[in-house]
Amino acid sequence: MTMISKLSRRTVLGAAAAFALVAGAGNALAADELKIGFVGVTSGPAAAWGTSNVRSMQTLEAIYNAAGGVKIGDKTYMIKVITFDDQKDPKRAVEGMEKMAQEGIHYVVGPNVDDGAAAVRPVAEKNNIIYFPYAFPKELYTAPASNAVLGMIANYQSGPAIYKYLMENKGVKKVAFVAANESDPLSQRDSGVAAAKALGLEVVADKDTYQNDTRDFTPVLTPIVALKPDLLVLSGVAPANAPLLIRAARELGYEGLISTETAQDAKVLAEGAGDLANGFISVGGASTPEIASDQMKAFVAKYTEMFGEYNDESNTKVYALDYILETLKANPAAIDNVDEFKKTIDTFEAKNPYLKDENAKLKYVGSTSFGQKRQLAVPMVVNEYKDGAFQTLFVGTVD
Image 1 (cartoon, one colour):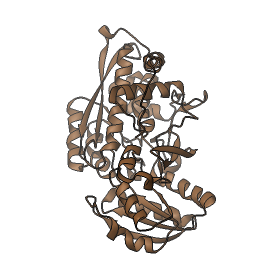
Image 2: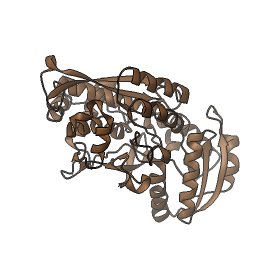
Image 3: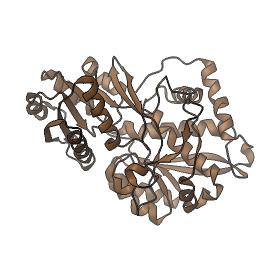
Image 4: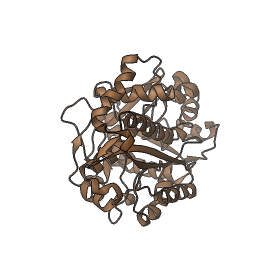
């Protein structure tokens, strides 16, 4: 979580102005209400993943509503975000999606983990809900499935890119994997192992697991460290566990690289591992100072004003709500008809307001991974942690 200690009044006030054109400001008194849902984890060890979703959505809600709402077709809508904490429990995720259906909501952001995203699929399909998981099972995005749209870069897209970069730039040859004994991280481990082997890397450990409530990782990591891998991959690691694993590995004398394909929290790393976390590689939010537009900076400023801190992962999470709104603008009939939304996905294109490049576009991708466009196009930013903050290693894309 990147902390911003001071904000200029000009920057904060500029947030509303920067978004006013996007909102298409109308008369708030005459506006209808457009409910957008969130179902995901906002408590427990993985809370940072869902909290960054909710706060991103609530920041945009505040910005757009302050500007008079969002014009879609010939109507202006005030945005109302409805949230549900699934506590990383698939059963609660189903309850949350059922709540969204009862509220008449057709567009939902989340869930954040594989189990939850898979569990809600029947509810979403039965109730005509398009949902935007931050979870990676390919069956959610490949035909005949059509209601889920991946909201971020998948581990099987980022993993090969990270391993290739470390091979070419850091001389990595031997890799070890460790994962929590849950379906989500185990799935990410298996795809990571396959990607590493496909690149010609030697995988020296791929069966070691731990329980998610583990607090002493020394017994888990001792045999792995003894193998002296060049890279230790913490597959699908929850933000709260990452610093504990890093600290244990370093205290055992491990001197190699440590990485993960999941988004992390700089504040949690600083508090839990301190300088021992320096060099830790993870997938970051979909922005860097080099590519961020003024509108992204305005979003960060407003978010920080509202919540007192900023999570780098929200550079990715900001996109989902805007994709929903911009797609609805492109086809207003999709407001209450998800089939119209699906029709629009294949041809949809709009200016990307969060990138400095004037030619950058919002568009749906995923044809290579899923055989159909069921993924948001967001930059793939890979970060390295250093002295309390994330620094960019490289930026990539998927198609």
